[in-house]
Image (cartoon, rainbow, N blue to C red; front, side, top):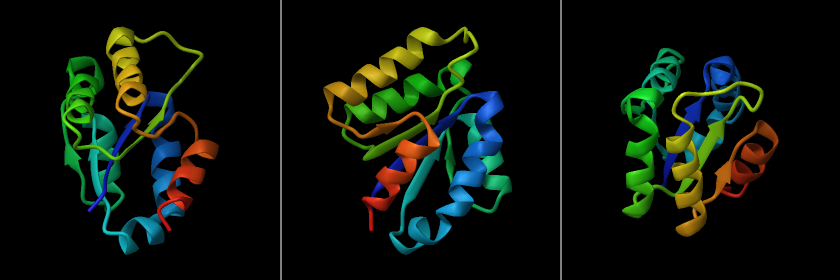
Length: 122
């Protein structure tokens, strides 16, 4: 079973849910395990998905996902970032992205790249 971590900044959460809905068939057919930062996870769960919710990003959720990446427990990260806004937990975000590079974990930061990664599961 593959594990995908999903994260979305506040302005991108609806876009994340829309992305998951558009790719629901692939996610269900491949029996994907989804983990998410707190609020993204709550929105995802409200849309009908089974998701393991971690802490909210600013409260340590990004760091929790980064730790799982380092432990080899995450196969892909989809992180819809808001590049036009400042975020108080930028160091955690950069750490997570750096660990994706260090551990060769695919990382999508926008829907176009996420779509290509999800198609790779087929």
